[in-house]
Amino acid sequence: MAPKRQAGRGKRSFPPPDKSRCVQVPGRGGGPQAPGRGGGGGPQAPSSDRRDDASGGGLSGPREYPQSIIWALCQHKQGRAPQASFQQCLQQTFLHSLGSYRLFRTASPFDRRTTCLEWHPTHPSTLAVGSKGGDVILWDYEVLDKICFIKGIGAGGCITGMKFNPLNTNQLFFSSVEGSTILKDFVGNTIRVFARTNTWDNWYTSVDVSATNRVVVTGDSVGNVILLNMDGKEVWNLRLHKKKVSHVALNPHCDWLLATASVDQTVKIWDLRQVRGKSCFLHWMPHEHAVNAACFSPDGARLLTTDQHSEIRVYSASHWASPQLLIPHPHRHFQHLTPIKATWHPRFDLITVGRYPDPNFPGFTPYEPRTVDLFDGTSGKMVCQLHDPDCSGIISLNKFNPMGDTLASTMGYNILIWNPEEAVRRKQEGLIKAMISEHPRVSPLPLSSISEKVLMDIAVFPQRFGSFTQLGPF
DNA sequence: ACTATATGCTACC
DNA sequence: TGGTAGCCCTATAG
Image (cartoon, rainbow, N blue to C red; front, side, top):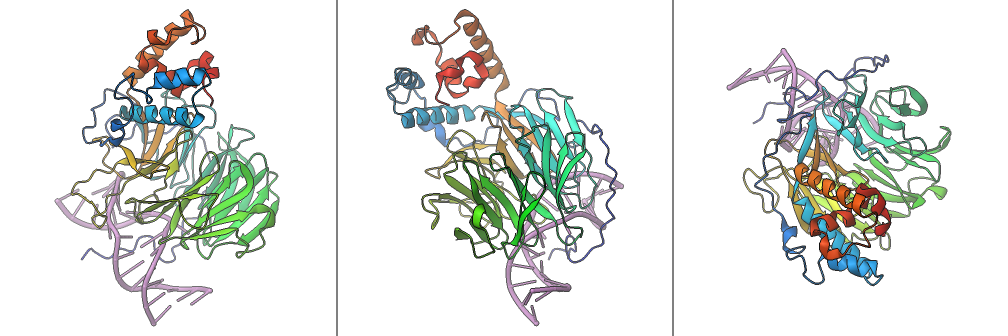
């Protein structure tokens, strides 16, 4: 038998929090044990063991009717293509490009595990990552030394939730094991304290913010949820769950709709306007295990839940009573692992989640790689797996940036950035730039004169190409 | 190579 | 309903 462990149990006296905060640049640029190329971005070994089920469908032949992006673009430009089919075609194209995603850059700036990951809402290459010691890094991965580092308190400082202030993107909301939900600027100055427990026995576990409704929601480790306005005034504070609240999420399109997930093995949907107590939920979704996360889809119509064992669920707002989709997926809980959370892609119907291979999960194979798995959000089929042979750890958190072309992951102490093969991209961008200077709009160009690869890029990521923004429906 | 360490969760009394 | 023994079994530093 394994030796008896005593970590993480019972009452322990924590070191008194050192409240002094300072700003510093982390000393370990890439980290001594960074997987291969901390901050570097050198040539990448191709990942040979990726399974790419998507390649069967999409762009096998450029002129194949009707999946060809050129066909779809023509149809769309002439106002003929049904929106759904065009969107589907773009998704197929994106899936195809996922096959070329490689580990682009890594960083290991912390002295403890990463616990939290959030992209900047408008700057496409900047992300914030929080750690178990309360440290936070703000990192522009395109500019190697452009970082902010907010020092945490060390033991017991764990960042549990993070959200850029939608009213001022130079500020971040944090919930923390240190016992507060707080708004700070990038230098670490406290702008406002929204909640404080004043005890080591209870702490905040998650935070979300609505810009339209001007409210802040935060959950704690004993089941309470607090609703506050942007000034920090408490609207209500109620015990909505029997155990720790693991996640709170406001619906992006319906700002009075709240989802809460808990280790009490339930997810609940609430109407913020009429919450009175734990029995006032609109809907109640019991799960087989504790639940790590409940995320609304970008259009607000669906809810994605991740449990602590082997289930990912998708619920539809039109029918909360039973899940629309139940995806079996190994991501079991372990005490010293950051809980695995599945997320939506911001623009396509895709779900991203880290795999923790489990000998008891059907289909387990020895030495099964710890991949990042992507699922189709409607069929539930796995469409792609990302893996880099130099990154052997379990990847707990995964999030695509708001533009949808870059994936950030966290693996233990490390931050990983996945991008389409860099050389290919640069080449394409060079091509596009040349095209733009020659032709300010794509319309006068005969479609046959543009390579399919270039068209695909314009269609899927028009934001990259300035003047083409008007082309798509997004 | 080996060990200590790190605010999880469940079942049970 | 509260306290805790037993179990889940990673990844890092020394």
